[in-house]
Amino acid sequence: MVTIEDVIQNLKVRLNPEREKRMRAAYAFALKAHVGQKRRSGDEYIQHSLATALNVAKIGMRSKTIAAALLHDVPEDTDVTLAEIEKEFGQEIAFIVDGVTNLGKIKFRESKEDLYVENLRKMFLAMAQDIRVVIIKLADRLHNMETLNFVSPEKRQRIAKETMEIYTPIANRLGIGEIKIKLEDLSFKFLDPEHYAHIKLISETEFEARKKSIQRAIYELKRELAKEKIKILNIHGRTKSLYRLFKKMELHDMDINKVYDLAGVRVIVPTIASCYETLGIVHKKFRPMVGRIKDYISLPKPNGYQSIHTTIFGPDGKILEIQIRTQKMHDEAEFGIASHWIYSEQKQGWINFLTFRKKKEEIREELAWVKQLREWQVDLGTDNKEFIEGLKLEFFKNHILAFTPKGDIIDLPEDATPIDFAYRVHSEVGNRATGAKADHKMVPLDYKIKNGEMIEIITSKEKKSPNRDWLRFVRTSNAKSTIRKHLKKEGLI
Ligand code: MN
Image (cartoon, helix red, strand yellow):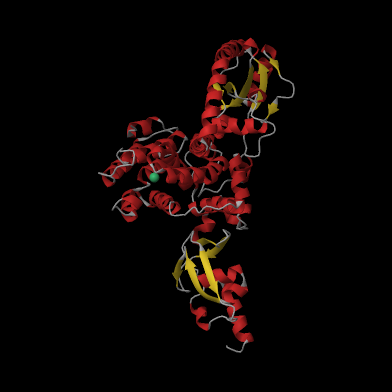
């Protein structure tokens, strides 16, 4: 059972009376809206809202996002409308809740094509319009995965596959290791139960065998670092996640003895300088393995990950991996994009990165996720400068993304019709169009396409020119000019 007190106690950001009031009000509102509803597990529905909010709090999000997390299923699953949420909690929270509701409407169709899956991920991000929406959606999915035992076996497989293919890579791209690893291990459990059980047993056995060595290493490192007056913020034993261990073992013919980072010790120290000093002390105390020192502080991983890793022969000769990092590096590794909220507060009060334009010199120190955002922006194929500079996902506010039957994404303005869609695909498809389907249902040619729909254009071989009255409803200049050109050519206008 999760309570609102648990959510509040797990906040990573400062709490003031106003924020606390907001969160409690959102809780009371959601409680009332969901009253009498139950989850498949038999729990009260509010347990799901609270669990989602708790997941969001744990990675460092603030009171507005937590309020939105508490309210995330209200418009979709109760009689209470978005307008009522807006009236009670304001535009910003209502906007986030609406984003979560809309993302829930994207249908994930199965496809064997990698491109389709990649497009779905992009679309998911693009449609969210606000990173906080994506974070709530990940937190929501995490709780749904934790309670997946209660749904039918078919649905379980579908949800687990969708989580592995869509949600896990998104959590990874946002750098939220904390959620990524949990989603990955839960999906692994449902998708490949045999390997899961096997790996779980290996992991537990191997960790057990190293436990004493890890405890001993922690004890000795604490003593040595104290001697050198290096402050330890945190030191703990760790193991590799089950899915990651499985992937690594696959690379090494399933031979556990070739996996050197199965378990080890993580040391968190105050500064970058003390990270390197700690490395020196580790190597003085324990013999390092040749070629196993990785300095991701000087050379961060492509996703921005920073730490120093070294593999040593620990007490009793057991091989252990030691990871050394600062608190900021640790938070970025665990919470990714969300850690921005923690650090922006410490630095200069609350900044909503979606609306705040950073000074040039601040951009230089930007977290790695900002670079990622830019990369996605390039991936998404837009050259909207404002998007890059303001770090907004707003480009997509007046845009609609629709699928072709093959899974390609067609980007259209709001209120675009199947004719606009057809001309975007190819002028011949436009000219020959006689009908259209949206998500497999017949729709008129002046139908307003909704975000995420799959549009199928029905064409005729005999038909070679566009209809004149299409000009009344098409939205894109491309469709308009192509239609005009053809009509002129045939002397129809
Ligand atoms: Mn939900």
